[in-house]
Length: 218
Image (cartoon, rainbow, N blue to C red; front, side, top):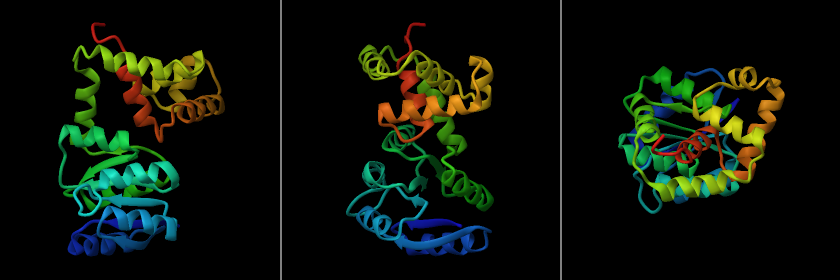
């Protein structure tokens, strides 16, 4: 059973989400929160698997709450918000969110995103995916950002770095295994080790870091 916490300052939105998820097999809504501070307390108290997190909330916003959870909680954050601005998408992923959806997403898309988040699989709305692609392909010439990313990645072994670069190309674990002539278990081990060394929460963050490290003139 996937345990879900609903975090949104609009009680009508929370009610709608609760009704929608109630009809999904294998999903249980364990609680609700109206602001980020309540989210942190509820996660520590109820230990949900997934937090459906709004961004704009009083007291503590969803981004701050996501950062707090990434430090000391096992719950995976799936952002569900009205806003799909480029900057918010990047900030949410870097804060530790495993996925980013907008509220007009189809109910079945939200349900599948919750299931994916529970498995640690990234789920992005079309707008969020476009934001990440734009970030990855833009030649900003920000040498300091590239240098910072390279310094962070320097702690990885040669194989871990190769796996990180392949993740940045959106390859699946099976595709990475085939490219690098490794077993699937070895790829998963390298990926887990890289995330731990870099203090990252998911492969989307790793992909962004690997993109940042690339030569902007290449």
